[in-house]
Length: 264
Length: 319
Image 1 (cartoon, rainbow over the protein chains, first blue to last red):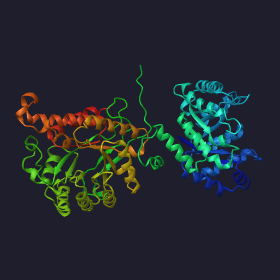
Image 2: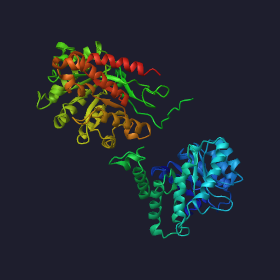
Image 3: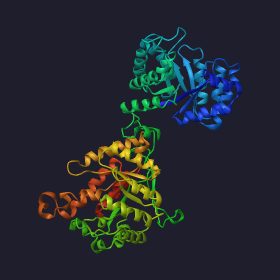
């Protein structure tokens, strides 16, 4: 599994506050804590309420780069903010994200080439997120075709079938799992798959959120999931992911498989 | 048509055995093993920066269990470990010497740790190649003997063995203190092999000083079983499993010279061929198999088998 830490996101009040006050110590400890817990990349999102998102992104990326060269997933819908984030990244960044009929598709793939970036692509278009697997796969195929034409390495393309909260779209969970499984048949080499995990429990009772997250993650890994943007500081969640990988034979068994995974 | 070339995620760890004076030892040369970026001997993908190496066995007592056809190659030096080692290096071109302290076993001569230490010192003085030092397979006695020997050879960066899941702590600690490498052995079980490497690393032992040994078990488990375990280990290591990415060692001679085909004299020579060639051929053929399974160090006995396997390595390692 490829673990991307979700925490540096202006949707969280403490991060929004840190961006506002330019509290670099707070951001740095968030970076270090997530890496210590197993993050292999960090999502970076300035959040909706920032007045000057370009400046905020520049500040965040620079602040993170002072303590780590971990790859960053630049998470924004704004072109300018994306380019600033990518240009300041110290190691191969990730574009988060594009969607199927995005008029920025060409621009973002050219950015990917320019900054040697991986790409996260959502299976949605102007009319929203398809309600079934077939609709999602159709959009995934559109993006893959575009990527192939652009000469983009499909091994670095992550299809995100977009998980919706279980409390509003319960029937969609099965569709997402099927999409993960079947998107592997769309091309050779197949695209990778990714989820923004926490969304599955958005709005659910706080007492069961973590349980929902880790149960769903295990199911998604069972379906073949390659990567997730998630709360890496949740130890139960990480141990569940590692165990699911073990059960899928992606890691060779030994009694200390949890610590063996962390030694990689 | 273009042949697809397999690309691996990771490389096998390079382990250095021996230390020259500038690194705190007295060896005239060191041996590097491992470092592979792919599977051995596949043209175009072949990625063995360090060739497989041959160690020859030297015992602290004359080996009673060896048949005459094997003993005859060494003559009198079998009674003198230092001379024996010198012959192996100078005459038979061994890359390493594997000192087997068989005489320390309580059922053998029950040599004391100090006796063993003296033999080790003499062998270290007699040859300049790096040393592998193994005990007598008596866990309690080995713990005493190895602790002392690790101290005697401090700084020489020997490869000490043999750590097992049941008995690894004492040897690991002694190797840390003496600055040596360690052989980690599992009984034809890849999961236990991985677990043991983790346990050893958990004692703060450096991962790049471990060499894996997959024991070939008693009757019933043949070479083919060990072969597939070794192959899986190598593939796991190349695929990114750090706890299986160490080089591997095989005690070829020790396995072969216990078989009846190698040991039996000329009473079956009509069917099996003359005894004087049979054992060496058996050892040579077994060594070739271990090489193909991914072995980095072959510990061998018969000089003729050593000579032949070196030719094979030279031929196979041409990229």
